[in-house]
Length: 253
Image (cartoon, rainbow, N blue to C red; front, side, top):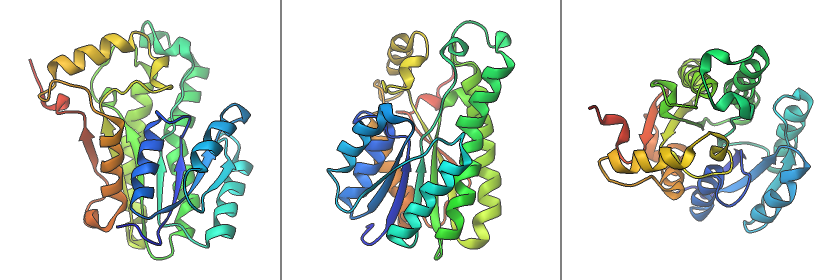
């Protein structure tokens, strides 16, 4: 399905990361992939995981540093010569902004969350587009807290709302280059980043109890949806937010 395709993955922290589940699904179907890491703390984990795949590349990339972003895409260009898909799974807000009341969010926390969690999609899409010479697919990760209030999700919900809007605007801009841009709205998964949200365990139990499938979604299921979105099987889909949450989003009272 993805033989001879080149991908770039943002957001792998460890083997439980949604980004890794996406990368593994794509690799299983023949893709070669470049991985980025933010800071030396994550370098070893990412290198170890990428080492399990053939012809991979690992490069540093802190999206708050434009020089690192430029260098990462330059490294991909030099090694592979092109890019066919990109998976963006980056989000961050200070821990203190992910508890209590949203109205107490500080200016710095708001700026940080929006820059890293939302603007970074625009940033990497702009850099990726010239490498997608024959078209391509960009996929980002969002969450239901973008449209409904989720206790303690706070500023990250606002950032995800901006991310979803950005997905639509970028899709409109890049469509003429045959580049598709979509978002996956995954249900809560017990990843390293998710643990930063206060009372995550309670949220997981609540969603599992109320979703139609009576369970939480698996990272592998999100990965398989990303595989679909970066493949030609989804060639007519762009600007969409696709829910992969065991149906939780359809439920009312």
